[in-house]
Image (cartoon, rainbow, N blue to C red; front, side):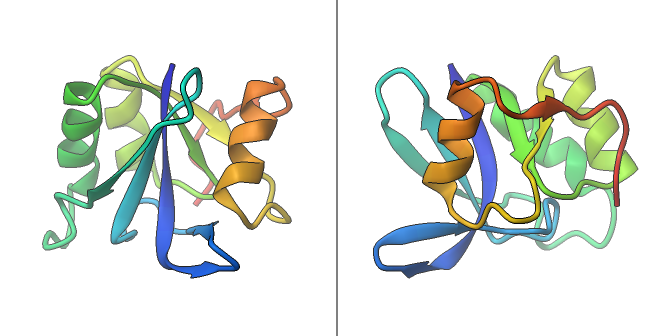
Length: 118
């Protein structure tokens, strides 16, 4: 399964940090949870003031993303992702690194987000 997370460009000890902001994130990591392969995708909607969710959801859909892992997400992006059939999971605030969030997802330790939380 392919999952996407907003990430920060900076790494700490070769570990990528999860970004708190979904729509304003410069980068997204798209991770294949079966193979461990990762692709970095620049945010295709960063230049927009509003309506970023549509472009992001479309890009994820084209890449085969089935789930998004977030710390915070606004209503627009939340609804657009769901309209593309993409599930949204909540990453706890204390989780800082991409690999930890992915491991929690793979182990079934993340809750599905039922509504926007930003």
